[in-house]
Amino acid sequence: DTEVTQTPKHLVMGMTNKKSLKCEQHMGHRAMYWYKQKAKKPPELMFVYSYEKLSINESVPSRFSPECPNSSLLNLHLHALQPEDSALYLCASSRGTRSEGSSYEQYFGPGTRLTVT
Amino acid sequence: AQSVAQPEDQVNVAEGNPLTVKCTYSVSGNPYLFWYVQYPNRGLQFLLKYITGDNLVKGSYGFEAEFNKSQTSFHLKKPSALVSDSALYFCAVREASGTYKYIFGTGTRLKVLA
Image (cartoon, rainbow over the protein chains, first blue to last red):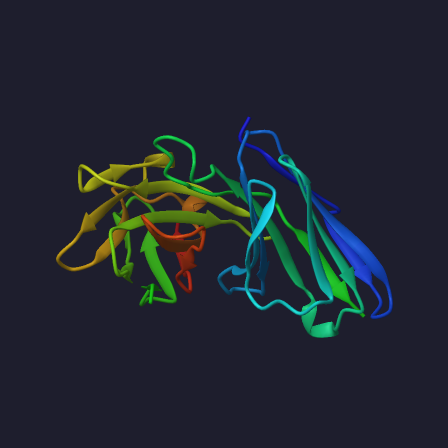
């Protein structure tokens, strides 16, 4: 199974709302990623969790809060977003660096299309 | 600093003709190189990778890529294009001994014309 699932597929939220994006994988991957993608642009890295610990935070505003409850799940908590945060949010996973022979290709979920009104 | 360049915003090719999508990279050490494809409103899908060994790597859906160390390039190729290959293609690189940070190119839109 090489599937990464993301829920919801679409989300519309006001600037005062609190919502969460969810991501799940069952490939035994120990690295999980959040990316933000604007239309026709490459994905921009936001956060990386490695072995359930936050490894990279690309200076993302605090209105985005990641959480990794276990090795299969990744959440992104959203609060007080701005209209410019509207984008496709992609989750990805890969093997961790402690895996033998690992070459680290990423597997992406289908994304959550977020609209902030 | 790592970087990836995809010099063409769009590539047009007739169905049945060979296609090439270009990618050049810059890393301080040995690179891990990847190609991904993205269809509209979908996530990125892994196509192929170069880690070490043979410079010509084969991937999914008949795609292949050639690693050229002297030219720091990793061009994506397919001998015979299909209309269904029309999509957005991203080249990505990460340092072999680095962190989990992947650098993506700006993307190339491939249009295969019937």
